[in-house]
Amino acid sequence: MLRFVPLALCILALPASAEMYKWTDENGSVHYSDQPPPPNVRKSEALKTHTLAHHSTSGEKPAAAQKSAAELEMEFRKRRLETAEAEAKAQKEAKAEGEKKENCKRATGQVSAMQNGGRVTRYGPNGEQVFLTDDEIAKAVAEAKKAADSWCH
Image (cartoon, rainbow, N blue to C red; front, side, top):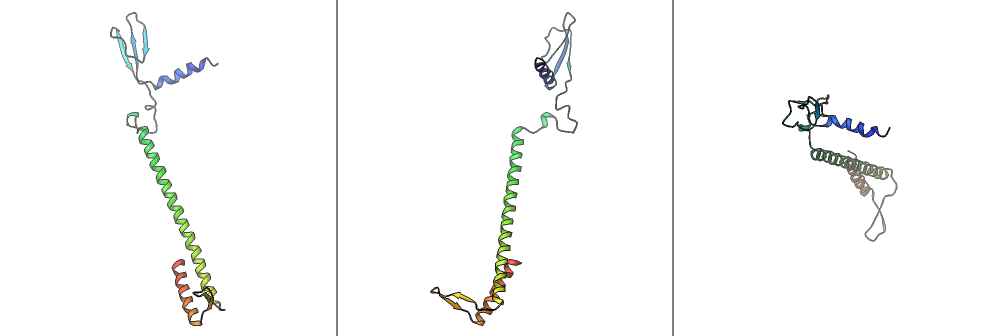
């Protein structure tokens, strides 16, 4: 069984050859070869061969017009780079959107905390807590609303 493997490989390799020749020698024997016939033959002809490029049924370009491996590699690398750039951009936009939502949440929380009443404090220059007056609280609420509007819209 294994002795037929080389024969099968040879048969499969035949259609991939470029050109086949058929000739009749002076004794009348017919020969087939991939090499051109010797000059002293009576009758010779070049046979059409069916290479893989000729078997194309999908309308592909012939082998001579196909792109080289280097061109295909460059196109592949270009597509891979464009994909990586698009993914990085999408990740950056998603991160920015997440940060924007988080900042909006914080700003609206600060506005609601100031509007709920109670005592509002800030730290003074020496690190002590300073209670804000009603006017200062109203001003802080206006600033917090402005910040919330900028983050949430």
